[in-house]
Image (cartoon, rainbow, N blue to C red; front, side, top):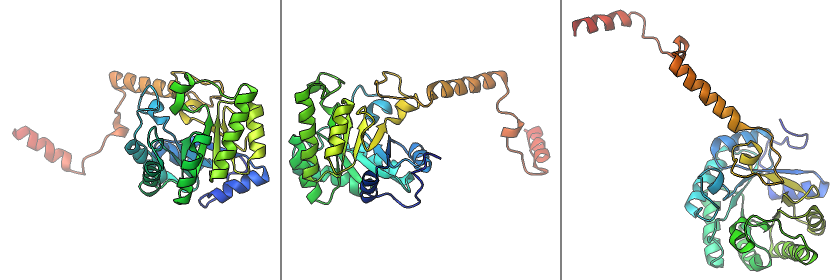
Length: 290
């Protein structure tokens, strides 16, 4: 099992996460894109599972998150919610599912809530998205904001680059966070920003602040599960800590399987089904007649 804080049998709610912030109790968050991974994360005691549009790169082999569609997000999110008994599940709003207007945002977020069964949706953007967050909240859809390094805006940002590294940009991020909170966001994700900026936002916001590459002072931490387990090796962000190298483990296992098949070690007698008693002799008699 995980740390001492995670043991709860019932489903976590946003009120539980807000209470964790009030008590200064760390919040754990991982991405999860499928049933078996979500099942393991939930059993281990992760507080929040994010069905991120990062699945476009980590699972579907896309070059970025931009080609991910609502249909993909609904399908993958539903697989995760089928597995989860305790964790709070957040579904990502993919590119152009909410930037085109409040009505589109409500319809698409509603799909994630109604069809996929997520507990909350996440969208990227700060001050410019405050009205959309407010509209979603009024439509009874909980929203997690996402500011800093926002992958859907990577073309505008000039690639995957850390944000808020000068005073003016750092203050703009604080303004973004406060605008999202004021609009009704129930949580905010900070990505790729200096720890001092993460600390300032965490101290000034009353909602839980989760960091991914935002330093140790946030209320909680997020990692991409494929990064921490060593599945995704195209690039490794500075903020990633690898807890296993599953690429090596799985490749070696597949190699042993291939060797066993070629050597005739697999399948062995223990992997084979026996015929019913007395039926083998009857079968051989039938073969002799043909």
